[in-house]
Image (cartoon, rainbow, N blue to C red):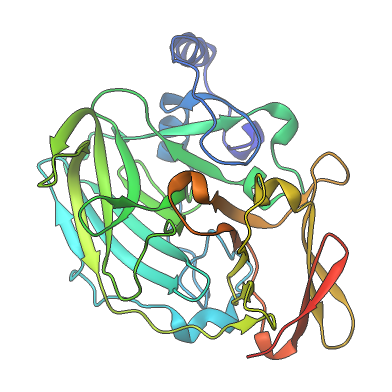
Length: 342
């Protein structure tokens, strides 16, 4: 969430009105394995955007300036798919959604997407809220997600952003608002997503906004949240990857997949430390259990296994940093080193 000092001081009457409104909002349950959330905040942030919005950040190489603000995503630049302006767009009577950049790694099963949502009426009404982190998890230097504003909605008429495949398949995902680029009526959003274990390679992805409070029935008879905006993409640049000798570990420049063919209880809960070992024998730490030093340089993680009907127990992590695979020699999980090769 935004730090209070990031924006000019509001008048006391405005501040009281915002606080009174926030107190009426419902509690929001946790959706990812990240730290607990408190509630959805929308009005205060919309006011902040009105005051503090700035122009598009320049000089970012790979198309995801929120996720890689230092322009350190050079290893992924050539794999980012950037549609021609105005080509991957959908709109309704209120909003227009455009896909700006997509990066999808089928080898490990993870991706990134950058969306631009425009308010066509210009009334400053933002159609989603922000999931507010508990204070102890805000703006921590070694937890990438603690510095981001995650989108989430619970009120009728608001939008939730999702990634789908086939007719009924949903990816696990987390979408974050880029407050440095967004303005009162233009919202720049970046999402990290992970398809479930039943995703089939080369299946097109659908980026959707679903309206809270409405549903629709698909041809199979299933009921899903009403899709008010939808764009599809099928062509992605194949990313390189490294694997362990037994194939149970796959590392790409943006993600890690760990698979057990003989599933245990919950693989994600068993991994307390992840590090990338480079060829110069240094380690780049990605994750350390928050109960110890609290390092988490991931944007999103998803675990799934036999309880979801899959034949293996797997966990996938989307990184908040990138690695040049040519410099990597191994992955280190819980102190055990696993050599990797192409």
